[in-house]
Amino acid sequence: MSNVFVIARHELKRIFVSPLAWAVLAVVQLILGFVFINLLIDYARNAEYGDQFTGVADYMGGALYGFATIVLLLVMPLMTMRLFSEERKSGSLTLLLSSPASLTEVVLGKYLGLVGFMLALLALLAAMPLSLLPGTDLDLGRIGAGLLGVFLIMLAFGAAGLFVSSLTREPTIAAVGSFGLLLLVWLIQILSYQDIPFAEVFGYLSLIGHYEDLRRGLFDSSDVVYYLLFTALFLWLTVQRLDLERN
Image 1 (tube, one colour):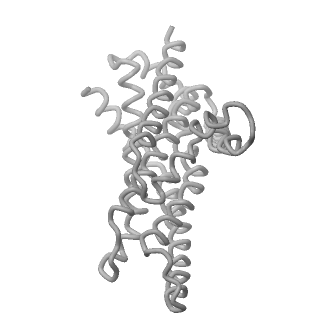
Image 2 (image 1 turned 180 degrees about the vertical axis):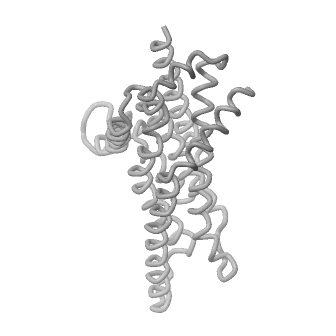
Image 3 (image 1 turned 180 degrees about the horizontal axis):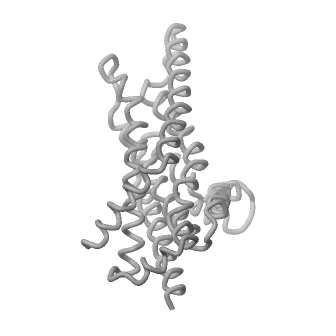
């Protein structure tokens, strides 16, 4: 396990040395901050006219987290595109695969480094609704469920992007491929609304279907299990892809 943390520390440092990471954090915070302020103004306007049909946590957190998933769908492929493809392009992947670390340790180390970036992104996202805590009776359970959903969907996005990055030596192709894969698994939710065979199966496989309950503050262990299995599947596929390359 020591190899995992060594690789993770190196990857996290490499991520934050890159201007891309800081640009992504700044742009995401700017966009979501703009959305948050507009939601706050809208909620205050509704309260002024006596329209308090939802609590502040439901109105602010739910809408903000819903919009955040769209932003994450766009930016996470940018953060995963270089994880393996850039190392393959520069030739350093050969050295990494020949190191004493196992393939599983290499993949987990890379992924944990990315998770460190995710936590920074999550902290910025949490700060906005929590800033209302001194002046309102905020439902922390509702906010916590929404943040859990955001974190789980980031884990899924990151694992899928890591796998796609292991398939190519061009970071831009990895970014486009990751976005296409994630969007496809997102949009199969549409098939669950159609009168077709296995409609319920398509609904279960969709990334966004399991997120909606958490966004509304409804915790269901099956949703958590889905994201963990999705993440584990693509991490395993990444290990298998690298194993083929090593052999």
